[in-house]
Length: 376
Image (cartoon, rainbow, N blue to C red; front, side, top):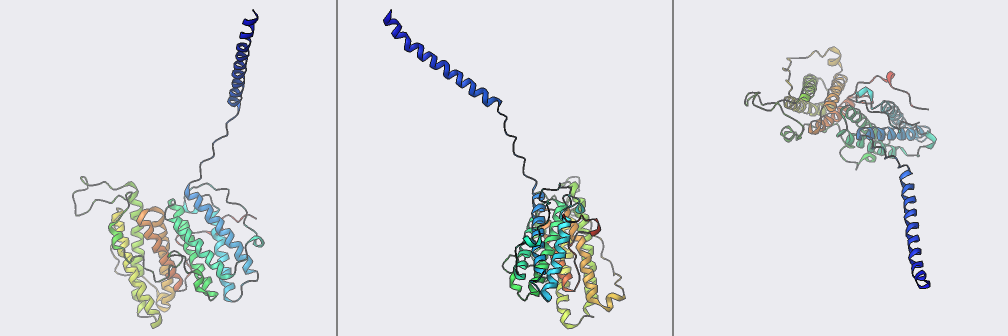
């Protein structure tokens, strides 16, 4: 008996260990079962909203830096350029506060980035040339984002970026250091002489996969060819309007050339060639997008004020093309949008060349009275 009990005791002990281990495992598993799982992280906001929030943050930061610089760091012509840049950034920030830029019709929700503007005292102290460089870099980023965001947001960012690049160039010139905005790539260095129609022959035949051309008029009947896309009507109509605006500009430049002094006739002749190329390109792209180009008008009413001051008249003609290109940016994508952004930027620089004001958001009709105020 003693021998049996001595043999069984270790077995009983091992059995108890197993039972205790199973009980502990059961308790631990039940504990894990009752622990509430952490909710999944919210999905990242759409890229259009990210681009809007980044544009707003940059505008507020640059505005604060400009306000601090205007308080005493700038003088003379630079002070006026800084004031213009601050006004520009204020209006742009107010427009970017709208839910997805309601003026552009995107309907993107407001993000938490719509916070109070940085206080001028908290903004970094930037000399005027560095502010110009930062403004040019911000404009270049806005133009880059405009290539791929949603339609209405693309128009807003393209206008904001173009205006920022122009303001940066004017500020750098006022400080006597135009090289402050150099080395930032083509987006920051778009000059008034750049022609978006140059080299466009390849763009006329190179399209993106999501750009569905209309049946060729000289090809088989439409019933046997590819069907036009439903979205083709709006891009085609916008491109027809852009072509019409360009043809009017061509007529105005032809009428003004004989009335301009020699120093202004050279740039005007160059700009005339740009408008002629843009008109052809817009007509070609409008056909691709199912549009029907309008017949060229025999003439346009320019008015005596245009003939008396052709420089002012050409500034108005250039400014009149901006909404047309803004519409094209908003309703197209791919290569056509890239072309329209370049055309918008070129028109802005030509407007400024003739002393016109392209506005804080070129290409976007804006009612400043409807913009929300900046948070205190």
